[in-house]
Length: 270
Length: 228
Image (cartoon, rainbow over all chains, first blue to last red; front, side):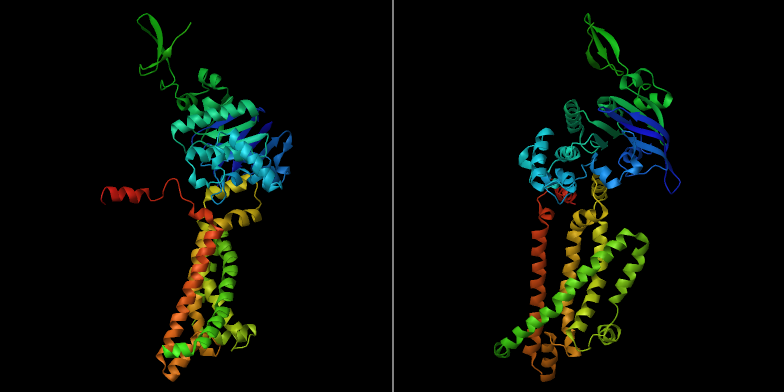
């Protein structure tokens, strides 16, 4: 369980990235932090593994204040996946995946064997093991990033806009893959994105942040859609622009559903 | 040509001496420049100072430097040590800026990712920053190699043997072939050491030459296609 208690972050130049956030993230589920740039979502994420230390308040993991844990040790126990994979360009795929286990002192050979298994898990062909990241497609690189994040079988997986840089088709593929993995592995996932569709698709729970790091709404996707907390949320999730509004229409005696532009979206079953 | 054939032994001897005079300062310059370059990159406030100080070293004329060093560090004037020290200083002057730039070119995302994965500062330096700065460092090293091999010839002026001795001797005795063989041998050594550095780079950094799935030069390719 991850808890943010009265967490605030002000950077030395005076900008406030996060303004007094209280959040408790349920274990073994995906929490998505969503907001536009400057909403402090990445800052919040990075507080979990002490890439950023809060100016006020505490971040607790399983009732332990992370400020009391050595940051290097802490980071080695938490999976981290970022945009473009953040792969080490000078290491082969298999060594990239084995990075953290090797840092933790695991023998290289065992770490590599496990890395190969992880390639299966994330749907990468083992023949790519000896390639360098630059030789992979964007989607493949991202899968390597996920495999690397899972390499020490961490309880917590932090994902910072991991699918932001790939094309829409590959992104959907990767999202499906993540949901499938999550059904099997049940990690505590904190996922940051600026894409509301992605947030609703992946999140068991979605936390919407506004510029300046203020939480404006926090709930399941259905709850948020049903009752946007305020105009900002409504606007942000596109509800008031009609983007998420579906209407019934009758075509030849059969009820179908059309979207705001009148384009068919599906058939209605009673 | 006759002069060359009858003096091959002497030339060979000087080649060895010349190598002994130019390889140590190259290594010294590299080993000294990397941490200074890293510091200049890492601590932004120090960058201007470090780069200016190191750069100005190169402006010191070599003869006065060779005459001053013995007084400063206690090496004998007419010694290879004096020469090696001076050449190392020039090497540092050439190399520090390249080293700082090489570290600066390391992808910020990669550094961020390595921190997030739990690299300690030292492991990140040895395991990520140093290897990724490798291609830039190698480029700097190659300039230092060529420059040092060539500069080492001035040792003859202070009476330390090197291929430069062929110049001074050739001038005094008016033997053009001797001068030319000195010039050519110097250049051959420079080319050979440079090639060795390139080869070493390929062995140590195979990733830098891995064929890319998507070439960087897409824009160039498109420009060629539209005839611009």
